Length: 269
Image (cartoon, rainbow, N blue to C red):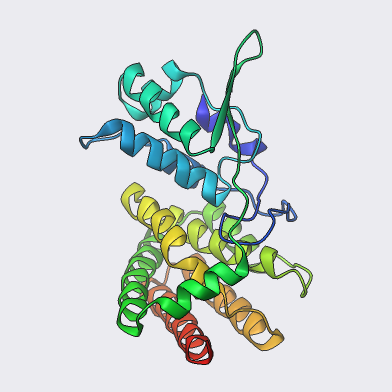
């Protein structure tokens, strides 16, 4: 089953960075983060939703390059849809170049992680975005992160607390900006997964694709890296302590700071 593949997932840079490169597998994707990709569907246009879920999982590295997807029947069971819907969704992903299908005894559908968007493309996106749109997206992301952090603090168990602390404490070479930005996204997904809300977790995944590339773009110098790391530790400790008020405040403050950095960078472009 899909959940049993979790332990094999190795973290990779999502699709908004330069070239995808492995980072230390100190932190594994949580069970809830992986399960959010395969949660049953309750909406119409099911082939499109299945395709989007899987595409999000590929973009974030939850489904890694070269990984074999479950069979069509297994995917249908996971998502609660027909095999026809799954087959149509896989066809969409093949057209997008996100999976490849092999025939024969060892055949199946395999993930093809796309080449990452160049840093210059993300800078151009930030430059062309209006300040009102940037602020609105950050407000949305702030709300999701704050609510998720508060719920995580209220529902956290020892295993979740250890995982979140590990995500906050991961050490990476200062010069490896791609790995740092990936670790930033993974930390937030781990916190959101600990909220035990599949909807919030899926929203976090979607927002990481939409706004995170821009928000984490300015985190490149030693000062911003240290500040972001300190924010992570503060948030992790608040969640582990079960302090929902402090956890929400820490999460919102972190996004506020990221918005301030993005705004400053935008003014120079």
